[in-house]
Image (tube, rainbow, N blue to C red; front, side):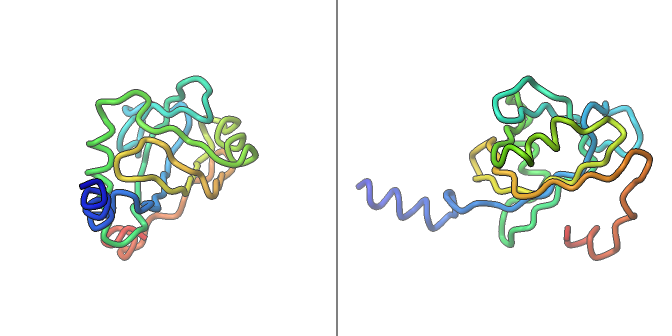
Length: 140
């Protein structure tokens, strides 16, 4: 019986990591320009941080859409918990509200934990290039 349940979960990809990319700003509120949604995140067991999400891109094929991932985590606080390498997590914590962040990581379908793989920070005042048509339609 247990084997049947586990094989069923494997077929539906419940244990398959989903690669995602969070774009946004630490500390920015949803009423500011370009902010799609305001999230509460936790970085490695620290205090809750407001993250102004400008874009969430699902990079794994066949995974749930970004909208579905956000909707499923909206009722929980924090919405996402970032974990991983301390130097990457420090880059998130130390970002100024004017610095654009692009955070890539992996999460499971039913989990709020994101294993951070990379963090890019743009200097204050610089904004990311406008997304191409491919990025808007396909998400990468």
